[in-house]
Amino acid sequence: MAHDGIVLTPSERTAWLRLIRTDNVGPQTFRQMVRREGSAEAALAALPGLLKRLGTAARIPSMAEAEDEIAGTERLGARLVGSSEPDYPPLLRHIAGAPPLVTIAGGYELDWQRSVAIVGARNASTAGQKFAQMLAVDLGAAGYCVVSGLARGIDTAAHKAALRTGTVAVLAGGLNHIYPDENIGLAHQIVENGGALLTEMPLGWAPRARDFPRRNRLVSGLSLGTVVVEAAKRSGSLITARLALEQNREVFAVPGSPLDPRAEGGNALIQQGAKLITGAADIIETLREADPSRGSLLEPDWSTEGEPLDSAPPSNDERTRLIEALSLTPIPVDDVIKSTGIAISRVQTLLLELDLEGRVEWSSGQLVALRP
Image (cartoon, rainbow, N blue to C red):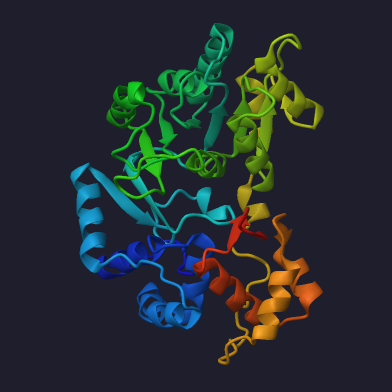
């Protein structure tokens, strides 16, 4: 992949956008194709032939559609930023499956290197919201940017309290589909006060239920640590905490009464080893040592950097063996390589093909599963 600090030319940006907006091309497949073909332009040129050989029809957006999205984004005062570019959020680069392109509105003066996520229940208690506000104010005063998901409850309280010091709202839909409606005004305030809105979704995309966990990996990925203020046992906040752990980030939880179902999630996290906090000082103390690059997941460790790619397509036998090695339960690609005995570069090609056919899905970069 391109290295930090390389600004995309207009034609490269259009090619990146067309490739990542192609059906079934996620961050993993985007990276594999660019590495394999040498550039997004070359990957786009190779894609129709590959799809034809696979007998699958994935829609590739036209040049005009990509240019329309770029122009529409600019009309909203926002920009599409590639992962190779200097203003791509640096902490996000270190997560597996980092989005190749993100849309950002505002945030020019933010310190993206020092940010903390505050997440929690949508139906938060008054005490929970007050505590989230206290944390946000104190973290902001200490120079930290507050990241959250613009949801009702804890997210809203954290964003509002951090307006003056800087906050980032990560959206589950396109930039012109802010959810929930009652936070559209807050979204505008965030940008007007120097904060940012960020999304990986296309312009015009209305968020669906499955887009929220995707958004949560960006909330944790943009942050040195994630604080869970109030969360039920099965909640989006706990997904964010789990993703933060997978990304080698710190997880903090606020303890609550065992009688309050909204405290169940946070208390369970503390039992599992999350740091119990009673104020921002506990977070600041821990984050002094935080360095996400130490656990960098920039590229899967099974990547074939420098290994010659087989020009012959994998055989049907290899394809069958690979599919038999997969199940609905996500497993590390390393295990697939070991159990099948197929060469790494051919496993890559097969997974790329299965991904384009919409037959596999990735979680946290290294794990792959068959789609139900």
